[in-house]
Every structure is written in C-alpha cells, then in structure tokens.
Length: 306
Image (tube, rainbow, N blue to C red; front, side, top):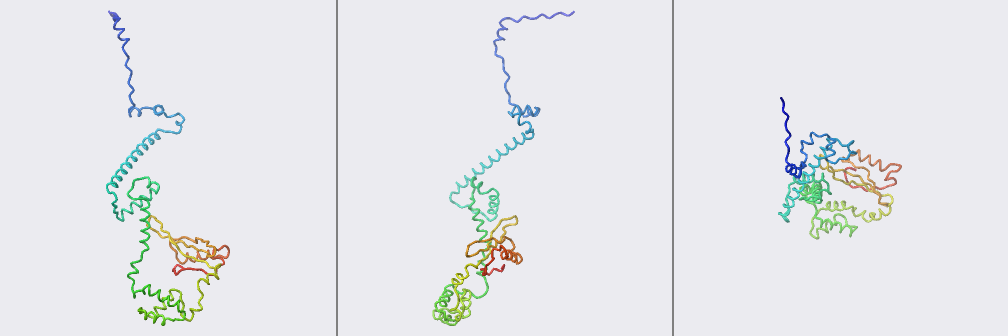
C-alpha cells in the first residue's frame, strides 16, 4: 500500500525572503586554452571577432602563425632594447676612450654591418658607425697596394737625391748646348759627384734629348696644339669588390678623346690578359662606329697590359 506524500506548505515569510534575495549571476571566466582546443573554428572566429568575409581565406593554422609571429617579434624587440641599453651603458662608462679592436673583430663587424645596411645601423646604438666601417675598407685597400717595403729593400745602388736630379734638369734646360760631361763637371763644382751616364739617365727619364738634338726638339705644347683633334688617351683604373672569396680587384679600361673630353668604358674584367686587351682594342678601333675612329695618336703608359 503506497501512501501519498503530503506537500509541505512553505510559510509565507520564507517565500517572501526567497523572492527578495538577489539571484547570484554566473561570473564570466576567461576561456582556458583547453577551452579553445575543443571549440570549432567558427566559434573561435566569433570569440576573437573575426569577420565572416575572412572565413574563406583564413585557416586555423594561419591563426597559430599570427600568434607565434607576434610573440617572436615582441621577443626580438625586447632583446634589441636590452642590447641597446647595454651598449649605451658601456659607452657612457668609457667616455672618450677608444675601444681597440683586432682585425678579426673588425672583419666580423664589417660583415654583419654590411648585411644590415647603412640606414639600419644609423637607427641602432652601435660602438662603430657606418663611416668607421668604410674607413676600415679604405685602409684595407690602401694596405693591399702598399709596396713601400719593396722600395726600401730594393737591391742596387742608392737612388740619386731629388735635389741633384732637379739641378741636372735645370742645367740642361738653361744651357741647351751642354752635354752630359759638361753637366757632370758643373755638378762637381757645386759638390755633387755623379757619373755622366747617370746624367744621361736622368735626362732620358724626363724626356730631354742630348745636346745636339735639344735645340730642335718640339715641345709638348706645340705637339698637342698641332694634333689636338687626333689625340686620344687610354688607361686602366681599378675597383675593389667584396666577394665570398675575399677582396677582388676589377680592372676598368677607359678611353678618352682629348678634344671633346668624351670617355668610354671599353670593358671590365678581373683578369686583363693579352687576348682580352687585343679584343678591346679591336672594338675601339672599329672602322664604323669605333670610339677611336680617326685618332692618329694614342697616349698610354708603360703598363705591361698594353
């Protein structure tokens, strides 16, 4: 026999207290990382406020890449700010004292600075400026072509002093009839003992003929004035270029017409051998359209490449 349960009547004052009591609202809890893991991508889009127009382009792994790239960028910025603060503290500590670097350290800074560029280096706090790196480059090129040690240790008799050479040229120009022996005697009278062959070598090096032909010699001024329209000049210049194997010298062949001052770059090479030089000469002296067409005299130096 089942008895029915009676409904217990709640007193009136309890019903009023329950109705007047404030209802507790559920607190908004920020989504847990695991909460996103079990959500659909459409729900994640609504959480982060991504519009539906991007739905056809943006994918879930795009969102991961965006978050990761932002975090990496923030980390890199913090590292750069920390390094700049360290360098500023070091420079303030040293004051006007110079930081002495080794060649290996200069090479490393030059390579890293070249990769960043001048504009980026000016925006950073560095111990060396872009102008300092360029100065190191110029010094390296100057040291590459410095052969002063060879001149100091060259074998043979010592060279004639410049004062004596200038005196020989002065005697020859002021006295066109004086020969080598006469100039040698005049030098002995003033206390300079040199041989007559040395006098002849000095005059030949400066383009002065012996006494019989010195009167009738045409000067450069007269020669150039008479053949100005048909004179051209040609010479090599060099440019230093950095490559993976180191510093490479490129040779540039330049020709010029003296009357018009026009120049032409005939060619650029790292190995100016005889075959290459002959081909450049053929190009410049072509019958039709050659840059040296109509030139009768060509000024060159004593470079072995010619």
